[in-house]
Every structure is written in C-alpha cells, then in structure tokens.
Image (tube, rainbow, N blue to C red; front, side):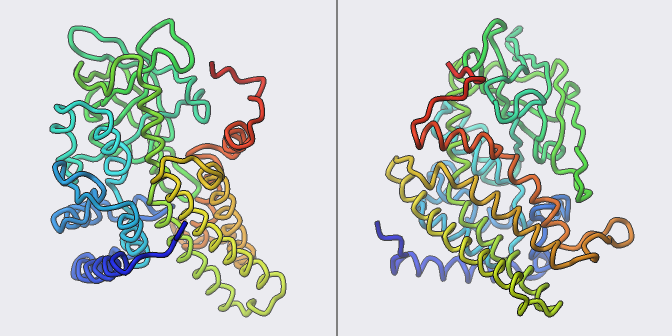
Length: 395
C-alpha cells in the first residue's frame, strides 16, 4: 500500500490552495478560523454566503457525480481539498450534513425523483439538513428508537422526540429514523423519512452547552407531516439506509479534522511558549506525545481510507473514532493545565478563550458519534470476534 500522493494529486493540491487563497478575500477574509467546534453559532449569515460562494466556484460536493452537481473527484482528491481547507483556516461548514451524509445516501439508495428534488438544492446550499437519529432513550443504542410515524391519507405523520440534533434550528429538512410498524422492536420496522423542519408540528429547543453555544438541539414532533414519497427505500428498510448514512460519516473529512487538530495543537504549544513552559519536562513530554500521536492518527486514517476504497473494514476503521476522541479530550486537558488558574476565569459576558472552548467542547468527543463504550464493543465484536454483551439483543 503506497500512501504517498502522486504528482497529479500534488498538482491538484496546489490548485486547491491557490483557489482558496483567492476565494478567502474581501468580505470572506474575516471568516478565517470561525465557526469551528464550540463556535458554531458564529457569523451564520456570512458563513452561509461563503458556502454559496464555494458552490458557485465549483468547490462543493466534490465526490458527487457531475449529473447531480458534483465534480466526480477521487477519494484522495477529496482528502486533499479538506486538508487544504483546514490549512487555510476556512470557516466551519454549514451544509456538511446534506453534502456528506444525506446527499451520498440519496445517490446510493434514493429514487430518481428524490435525487432530482433534493440534490441540486444541497449542492447549491439552498437547503440545509440535520440528522434525526438519537433520542433520550436511544443514543448509542440506535436500534431502540421510539419516535413513530404512521401513513395517513398520503402523508407520514410523526410523533416523538430526537435529541443532540446539530443545526436543527437552522435546518430546512431532517432525515429521521422512525418506527413505522407499531409492534416492531429493535432493527425491524424502522423507516428513513425526509421531514421538513419549518412546520407547526416541529418544536426545536436548543441545548445550551458549557461553551454558551446552542448548536445541539432537542426536536419534538407533534403530528409533524411529510409526503408519502419522502421515504428512502421501502418501509421497514430504515436500519439498512441509516447504516449506509453512518458509513459515509467516516469518510475523507476525517483528515481535515486532523488538520484542525494540528491548528489547535499549535495554539496549545504557543500558550506553553508564552508561559515559559516549553522547557518544563512534563509539559514538553506531553506536547511531544500529542505530536507523535497526531502523526500516527494521520497514517492510520490514510490506511482506513485506502481500505474503504477497496471495500475492506480493517483495524483503523474500527479504532479511529475511539483514538481521535481520546486524543482531543487529552489535548483540552493539557490546554487547561497550561492556563492554570487563568483557565478558570472568563471575560465579561462569558467570553471564553479559544483554549477554554477547546477544553469544554472536547468533553463531548467521547460521547457523540458513538460513545467510547460502544466503540470498544465494536472493536471487541467485529475486530476481535468476542461474544456480544449479554445485556444487548441485536437479533
């Protein structure tokens, strides 16, 4: 396996870098470094205009087929774009749930009418999406969802609650995993529905985090409705479709995330230098350890992407989320140790520093997108062939 980039890929990297430098000028220059983890509420209108600017310059939905507004780029070209995007400190994306999750799912599993209706508006950033999976009693155990939907007079009518729904307050649509067979349990009887968010039957309540941000939400469906045609796959096939969506979540953007980690590690190292702590043995060892682990994370992710391209599920794919979430949490703790008592102080109006935001937001990393406990079960069962937990019945 050769993990080096080819000459053609390096030429593409130079093209991406030059284009981003040109695009991130004028009114968009001030967006650099904004809208990341713990800063999701920042400059929404400006970031939305930026994403539409990207789309107008053909830098959106890169791996999608050209027929649906994409560029048919290879996996490694997509990796290169995300890496350069992070290096340029371009703003946090608003349309990534539609572009990276729902769009690929519709391309793979949707019908032609759904592709024609939804994909162009995702590509043009005219409609934003959120994900309706987790519930108060069904987070990591997704098969326990109880949100229900019934087909009545040509419409699906939804009742129930979703939680930890990112960007729900700004989304136009939500893809919802709901139970459409009343007597069903676990994986059976679930359906994958596309639900408009701007209607009377949808109540959205932001969950205010320790950072002061409210990018996660509770969503209550009280006789919310969507057309009978807004179901991906057949009724009862929701689990299969939902798993296809989750597979896209582990894609090429993982390397961009690591470039963001690199930026954060540089900030932490800068804080150590400002405080004269680079020669402190414990601090210097922890910084070196973080750097080595970040390099290992990159090579492991390249191996994972190579395996995904060949249809293989290998060790890096199973361990990736557990590894990076623990690394990021540890970096946040290192940042607080460097700040000392200053880390306990906030400015007027709860004005947090970037390192304080890093610490507070990274506490959630080991929970969302699959908790550490669930990730360890996956490694044990799928990687090591150990028996399932006795308390779980996934049959």
